[in-house]
Length: 66
Image (cartoon, rainbow, N blue to C red):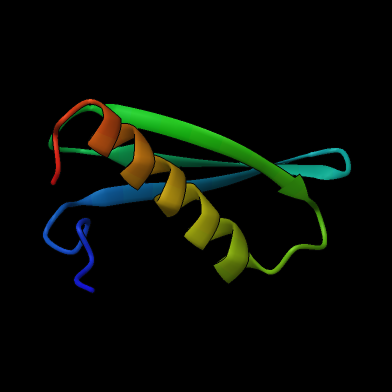
């Protein structure tokens, strides 16, 4: 299965808030931003993957990717 976000520029930001980390993913092409929250001890790769999956879901729902 190919990655639908492979040819898109996505900016990832992680901001700690107490015991949580807010992870934002921003698709530059469509100006779409999503965010998730995760416990502070969660591995960065897992947080990044989950944010990208949510971004993919939103872009599919909007009809911006196939």
